[in-house]
Image 1 (cartoon, one colour):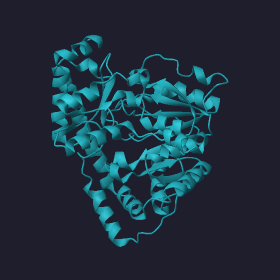
Image 2: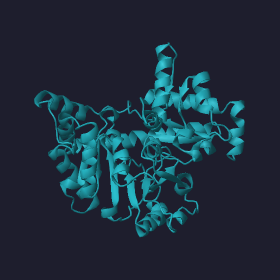
Image 3: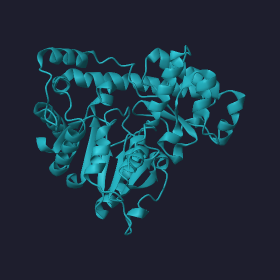
Image 4: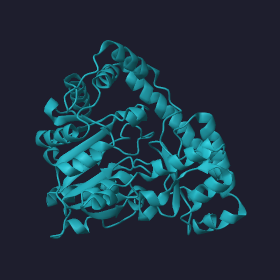
Length: 394
């Protein structure tokens, strides 16, 4: 039994890469980091000041498992303004950001339930579903984000329809926010079939153009929406997120938090509440948007200059990432780490559809990002990778 549980607990692939890189650096190897969305390139001074102030003034005792009431109120008010509808505090749960994915799936499923997840998609969707022993099926997010005609609702129109569907737009790893109309048929058919919708909206405010358009109205009684302070406000180490869901689902998520981590630190929650209520929070997000727009443009320019433009899987316009095709090869990430000291994330960790690709993160220090992008373009322009360009049609 212990062995069975152990086999179902798998690490996120990007952290395995990071551990490998840290080990290399401890041996004196110089590595350029493009592998993980650690937002070292964005210094959130304002939130740090709130954290210091609250740490000095607050007792370090327990907080409610569902989150500090004040933070839940701030989040409810903030989301109500965004959505244009009233939201009650008991519809809000505060929890470690990535953990909310597992909690949400657990709250609406039992072993054997069907779940439809994006491919490529954030690895935790598959890892959490496997841990919960769900029946996993996938839909093609590359085609969806490119606007290609695909039938991803067929499985919802028969007796074998999934109990839940995960939608991540903007998508990690693609680094792309697709027009919501590309998801319209999937969402509407899910509602008709009675499937739960889990929206991972980690990067919803980090789309750098207007291409997504207006969101689609959904049944709030059959949907869970997950958000991340950690990513949107460039404090990934705080691991803080929140979700909007029906009250009975939130109650289950809160019990899960109580069972596992008991509660999230109160002084961090209150510091985040102070921060989110200020105009400076919105300004900081705008600074991220401006900087990331420049970084993604620089990536495109470097690749175009080397004749590599067609290797970009989708033109990145959101989040911190971009996916780069490596047709016919799945080990390029490992190879360029070993030979060129460039750390990227293997595409296979995000799904079958991205196995022949690598993901790069542009969230680090701007000087390291620019150097890494330049070096990566130089490496992929080498004759040994010429077939990549040929296979991609450039």
